[in-house]
Amino acid sequence: MAACAVLLLLLQSHLLAVPLSVVSPQPTPAGSPVAAAAPSAAGLPPVPVPEPSEKALRYYRGNLVWWGGRVAWGLVVPGIILFSGFSARLRDCARRIGRKWFVTVGLYVCLLAGVFWLVSLPLDYWQGYVREHAYGLSNQTLGKWFGDSLKSLMVVMVFGFAFVWLPYRLLRAFPRGWWLVTSALAVPVIVLVVLIEPIWIAPLFNEFRPMRDQALERDILALARRAGIEGSRVFEVNKSVDTKAVNAYMAGLFDTKRIVLWDTLIARLDRDETLFVMGHEMGHYVLGHVWKIMAAACLLVGLTLYAIHRAAGKLIAWFKLRLGFDELSDVASLPLLLLFFQISSLALLPFINGYSRHLEHEADRFGLEITRSNHAAATAFVKLQQENLGNPRPGLIYRIWQASHPVLADRIEFCNTYAPWRTGQPLRYADHF
Image (cartoon, rainbow, N blue to C red; front, top):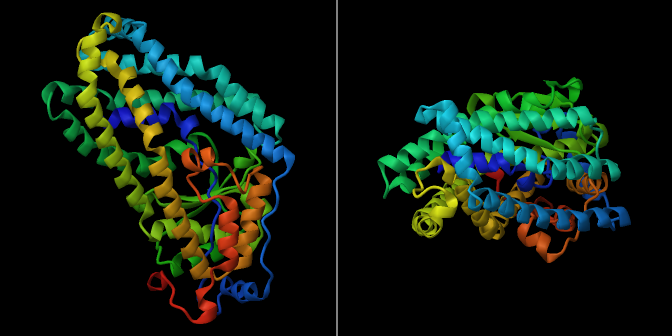
C-alpha cells in the first residue's frame, strides 16, 4: 500500500538514514571564477586514504551493533503489538472515539504512531542524543532533540491520517487486484512527498536562509547553469545547531527544486571542495537519478504488496483469534503490513544499496568530468571521513546492508585516478555540459 509504505519510511526513518553524500564537483565555462581552480588539480600529487582513528573505529563498530539492534527492534515491536491483540484494542479505541470509518482509520494510525514513538523513545534518546554527544558529533540541546522528535511524530500522524484510509478502502473495493492499484498509487504519493519535503517538512526542523557568502553562491549558480540546471535556488541551512557532520544536497522537483548546503560544510570545506560537492549533487539531478530512485521505490513497493497479497490472508486465517481481526482490510492489520515492509526492506537492501552505489559512482564521475578538480574531490572525501568519524574500508556486513554510497577509500582512489581528459579520451557525460 502506497500510503503504508510512506508511513513505514517515516516511522523507521531513523533506521533508514544513509551516510552523508559528499562527492564530486563540476566546472564552469572557461574564464569564469569556478573554472580557474580546475587546471591546478593535474599537477598535484594523489591524495592518500587516511587511516581511521581508534575513535572512528569504535564508532563504526558501535554503529553496526546499533543497526542490528534497530532491525530486530523494528521486527519485534510490530510483532508484539500485532500478536498480543493490542493492535485490535487500539482499533476498538479508535472506533469508540471516531465512530465513522474514515475517522477511525485516521485515529488508529495516530494512536499506533504514538505507541511506536513512546516505545522507541529511550533507544532514540541514547542513540541519537547521548551517543552522538559522547563521540563529539552533536551540538544539539536536549530541548532541540526532543522537539524535533515530537515534530517527526506529528509529521507521521498527519501523513497517516491523510493517506492510510485510501489503500484500506481499495482493499475493500478490489480484494484481488488491490495490490496492483495501490502500487500505481505509490507513484503520485512518492512524487508528492519528494515535491513538498523541502518546502513544508524540512523547514520544521531547521532554518533555511539565503547564502551569506554571495561569491560562493554565484559560483554555485554558475556551476548549475553549466550543468544545464536552470532556475535553481541556493539555501544555507543551520545544521550546526544539531550536528558537526557535513553534507549538501539537491532537493525537490519542478518549482521546489533547490540546492542546500549545511553551514557545517561551508565552514569546513574550502571553495573548490564545496564546488566539487555541489557538482556531485547536480550530477544526480542532471542524470535523472531522482526519477530512477523513485521508479525503483515504486517497483519495490509493488513487489512487497504482491507478497502481502499472497501471504497475509493465510497468516491472518491461522492467527485470527490472537490477532483480533480476520481480514487484511481491517485497519488493525497495519502492524502486519509494517512487518512485511520491514522484512522486504531487509531482504532487498543488498540490491537497493548496490543500485544506489552505482548511481553515486556515476555522480562522482559526472562531477569529476565537469570540474576536473581531482585533488579537491579527494580532499573533500578525506575531510568527510575525518569530520564524520568515517571508516574508509568497512567490512562486508556494512558494505552489503548499509553502504548506500561507495566506501570512502574507493571514492578517494577514483578521484585520484579518473582523468580521461588528460589523455584525450572521450568523457562519458560531455554532452551534458
